Length: 201
Image 1 (spheres, one colour):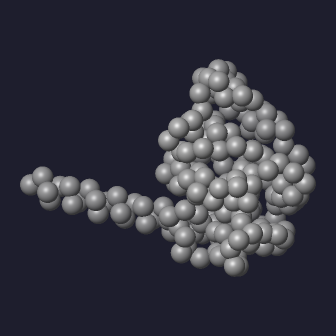
Image 2: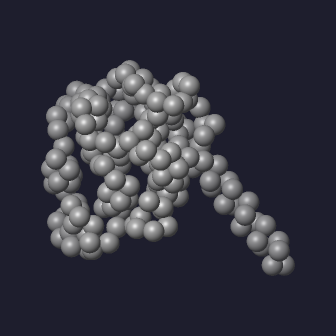
């Protein structure tokens, strides 16, 4: 599936009620119940004095299997809820339904079968929700990468199989790298605007 065709949610998206029909208020407990969230921890883990999952809601896009349930448990231990989504369409819909309320997104490249499709999803998330830290999980990468080298596509990369400690480190790195990415976007935007002004003079 390409990002250009059938990527955006519509009234026929199975299993997801269109946002236009959502008449509920944005009560946090209702939103989390709607996702079928499990085991929200009351003992939130902290990094540098701040909770790892400050907003309490994150998403995983990939095969919903035993591994995904383990990821969900680890996020719960860090004080958050991880919504498990199997398709790019469901991921896009989730980001549209919960703007400004997502701690991070994880995309499991191995679940897609086509690396290009996973990267397309990451680029879409990057453009649509640049303030959402993005973590890529893949078995084909040589090692974890918590630098900002791949910031055009993601904020951190985890090599599968993943451990709880490495996932927490990736979440922390993704938050830090996403702040750098947003600053870079702002700087680039300001530079492009300045060039447009000069060209129009």
